[in-house]
Length: 444
Ligand SMILES: [Zn+2]
Image (tube, rainbow, N blue to C red):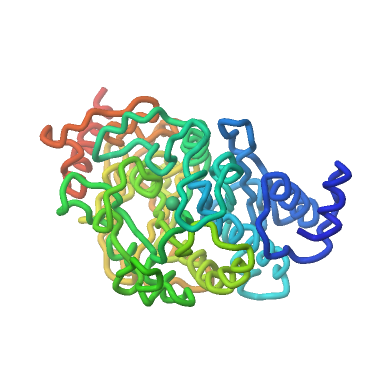
């Protein structure tokens, strides 16, 4: 923290401007808040700071948004996010977030790549999902002190799980993130951890080793490899003493099953592809290592953000020209557990590698099947393709994906893979069922 900021904090007043770049040290809750507020004050045109809720102890869960229109979603501009420090004792990610914010705002308009990224992406950065845990952490490599929230729950075991009953009561920090996910159409995300050096991708949980593979496995492997390969050492796969990860990546379930994890929740219930980045062998290393960690991760963090622009995006309109909310937009043979739906602007975003695909758009009463070639993304934009269906559609205003099997955010669902429900995760059944339900609704 710059001395001006630190001194002002000692005097109990908020400094107005950050006059130099961020220092390489750990920033407690007070310093972190002051830094974010000052960045927001210094760069009001491209940042927006808000709290998405409170921790158990009442600390704000800050998110700073960086973008050309930071306060609102613009049609065609994808929403990206980074979340760190959900395990309070895994501290490196928390500082990486602050340095990323610093790097983005200070390079806007001087670095053409960063300028393009900010102009064409809305970037949400949450430095700490578990500020209570961080404050109570032991500054050691292995200790679990501070990992959990103040109610002693592991936040990365606290989300509704599509594969298994999760009896843990949903914690305030988890609920805040779940609510946040409903307010934006997040497309791509990563969450930062420590204790290993690897990029881990969904699924984190499964009913069997055969369905640990998601329908977007190719894209997830691409994303994980991209981060690992751009990172200074992660690609080696053997950086930490216990690591043995070919290419520095792993399927989460294959590494070890995680019940109630955040990345599966993002992907399954929020249409947001998320990977988990383990970025330090030591969970809470000495502050003197932070600059090195930043140098190791900086390029990977930037490259990963750019990937929100791969694939295809567009809008679905009805015959009257009105955007259709909750139209199902899915690639054939790539149906998700919860079908991907258009948002309130009729928008869809599908992250895909270049190639030929059949894209299916379904609304009550009709559907469109379109063969499409998706090229490499260029100029910070996915390929754009809009659809117009041949019928008028009265869109349902619900932001909840009602076709999501057992997607209750309030109560855990029963594990029952033998009833033909969730167990067929990557199969066609959920998609067919949802289509039938929509057709039935049309007939009422
Ligand atoms: Zn962790």
